[in-house]
Image (cartoon, rainbow, N blue to C red; front, side):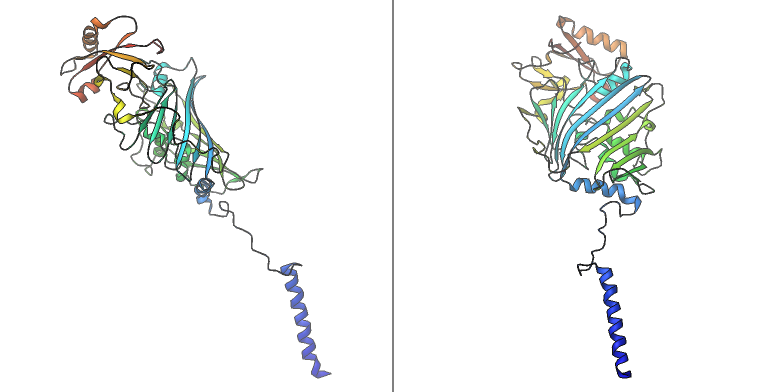
Amino acid sequence: MNRSRPALRSAALAAVAALLLSACTGSGGGAEAPPTAHPVFSAPPARQVLLALRHTQDTGGATLRQTVTFTTGRATAVQTVTGRVDFADARGEASSGWRIDAGFPRPARDTLLGSLAALESGADRGRYTVDTRAIHYRAGSAGYWLRYQGDIEPLRGIDAVSLLRGTESAVGGTLLEVLSAVRPKAGGAARPDGGRTYRADFPLAQAMSLFPEDLRTEFAPQPLFAGSPGAPVPVTVDVDGEGRITRARADLAAVLSAEEDSALAGVTGLRVDLTLSGFGAPRPAAGATPDGPVLDAARSVVPLHEAAVGECVDFDTGMRHRRLVTRVPCGSPHDGRITGQHTLGAVHPGRDAARERAERACADRSGPGSRRAWSTPAEWADLHEGRVTCFVVSQAVPS
């Protein structure tokens, strides 16, 4: 019997081991898989918003809606952009429109809408499609699209169209462009839907990627580089349980200038709110082919002073600048017709004298709907002479 004790002891140990193994592996007898790491929340906190951005892009596409709200007193100016992006194919489409309260300061209103010849209110709505080859822009009142491609430089230092193309998504000018610079210091707060909310910030200079070049000049001076010191911009980012960004909100009041001569003087608040939904490949696909006639901007968009006498033009080129127009056939709807082109001398004579010269040059072209546009001091210097264009506007253009 003593000889059997080692065998009995071994058998008992084997039974215990079998019970322990059974308890660890469950009744099925197979090894239980380790918990799956979450694509976002399992990462270090400082990387979670960046990973959420990448995970959002990996979904294939999304529907977006962004509002940019400028506040002064009780009046607001709100730009709303709605559209769809196809992350996989790097294309998208969007519509943009403004709603501006009657009490909003006129200089600020004109600055936000851009400066267009004969259009005191500027351009308040438009559509665009974007892909890797071109940006197509359609003014709110136009029956055609303008195709911009290659280097977009109709005039030196003027390019508002490139903002329409983004780097983090096809549609530019949204908070998606700055989220890669967001570095939360802690993990996000838990949300009822299983997601998380992050509170962080990004460099002030990074915010400039949200606005066209001409508007940036009205903001407070920014650091030269996105990583340079500067007041941080607070941002809140909502991520759902699957790791997709569903909302981002930023307070950009720090970019507003305190200078009294700023065109945005009196504007005290600026915030941006972006929402994303409808994740997955857009259905129908985000449009890359415009619906309607297309004009090549390289041929059709010209400085106002280069339009020939007798030509017809539209004023909204998507470039937000009074010196640029689109040449269109006079047999189709148009904003204006050129009636005269004149030079005003090599040296700028002062604002009042420049106005008098322009009025005299276009005096024989006066009549219903007649207008004139002449060089500003800066434009006078660029051209090395002053120029005035006389034109008549159609009844469809507001005065």
